[in-house]
Amino acid sequence: MNRLLLTAGIMLALLAANGWQYQQVQAQTARAARAELSARDRLAKINQLQQLAANRHQAEQKLARAQRQLQARLGARELRIRELERENQQYRNWAVARLPDVTQRLRQRPALTGAGNYQQWLLSQSDPLPAASNSPDSERRPEH
Image (cartoon, rainbow, N blue to C red):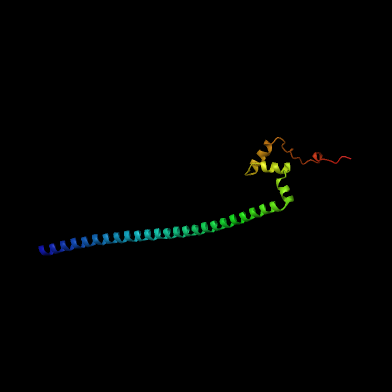
């Protein structure tokens, strides 16, 4: 009987140890699955960032090419203007002529962003625009 109890006790101890070991294996498996999922997510993010970096690099190269082309065209245009100035007396006279007052005022206007800024700038001028009116009496009539 002692042997039977001893054998049963050993069996229970082995069964408990086996259950504990099974739980440990399951926990390790779950941790490994989470780590694999995390590694896949990180790899996907790395691949996405690498693709974004490659796209950005291509866009930068495209912009640099466009900038070089524009600079070359601008240089050719400026050269052509200088050639025309040397060739044509009428053009030289036009180029050095004083701009009309209306045009000069356009060039003096500050850079405005939005209707509110434009209205405030207009009102700050010495000769603001007259108030708008919808009545026909405010319209000018030709004098006879």
